[in-house]
Length: 107
Image 1 (cartoon, rainbow, N blue to C red):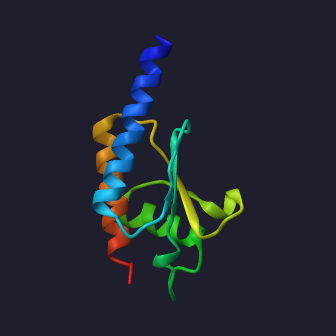
Image 2: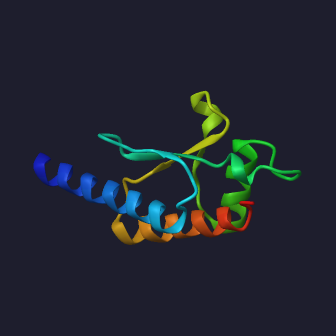
């Protein structure tokens, strides 16, 4: 059972990395090794209406229905953290929504 879980988390991590590379190639992220989350930079979306990761995460959930955790909670306000411990189709949809929101704000 553990081997199956490890394989599933590895597949989800690889899917998330592939989607970030395809949909948001300009966005820096921490390559997850054994973690079940992506830690990615979103300070390029900051502006007059978005003044930090908490505001960005609030706007993202309100506008795209995606809940991610502000990086300020982990000591770096430039980043956000998103779980990849979800079904593949949910992960694809969520990252697609994150990408759509971010692309609308990146310079």
